[in-house]
Length: 333
View 1 (cartoon, rainbow, N blue to C red):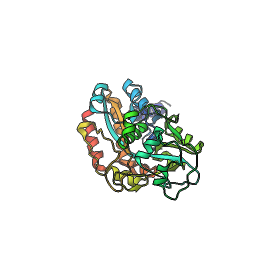
View 2 (view 1 turned 60 degrees about the vertical axis):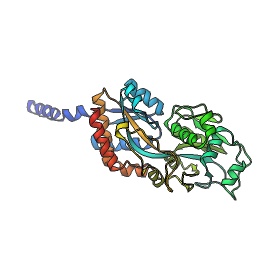
View 3 (view 1 turned 180 degrees about the vertical axis):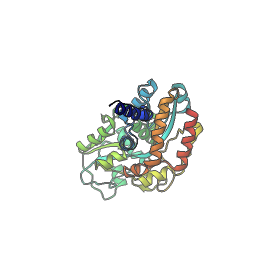
View 4 (view 1 turned 90 degrees about the vertical axis):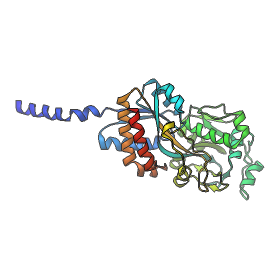
């Protein structure tokens, strides 16, 4: 019996380093990347035994929680400037790329049947265009029959990186929007009803007839909600897809020295989706344990998660950018 107990003890001692290293990893923030982070976390636990618990609470909540040190990492679709990161003691790097789409619940319209310009989209969310039978919509969609009904706008009620991306785009497209509303994670929406999270907006549009909202593309694709096409900077009508998001990011000027701060809205290119975006990870610089755990997880994702990302309608980071981020991590340790 004594030999047996000693053998068990020896086995446990041999396993101890891996058991100690496999503590849970916690994160919170943007709902934009929630589908892919959940998928990566599931596969990572199967491969390593380490759990990654990610809460989809919005970019504002993620920034707040990581700054306060209540999670190992925060996630935000609203990139932080180097100055803001320095004040908060954070480091930042992109994790995956995607796109924001306008979704509608409009009888007789399927995916891409509705064509919108950036200016018309801004006018709808500002309440300047308040009915589906407005001449501006008819001009963009010749031959289409619109209902003689009011437009029901649905927006994000929480502090949201998806809203930051969307409102940055609307500000570029419309001087009236920029002056009256502006851009940010939280704005004073002129019209409509607020819902929490990408899933909340998706659900709201799905329930309410003659409605329009905006979500990360994966939510529209997964929930089979109709999306609109957009006219891009090149004047082309484009559909949201992994290819059009990738086209928008193809010539992006990522800069390690600026902590990768970058917006991908209204990018040049005939095939570019005009509301593309990166989503970012934030970690406290004074927490080396968290930095080690977080970078180990995302390094694994960078090596093993591209197929999963593409399958969920995201765009993996280019290999050259992943290598650059690995060099950036060395400066954070």
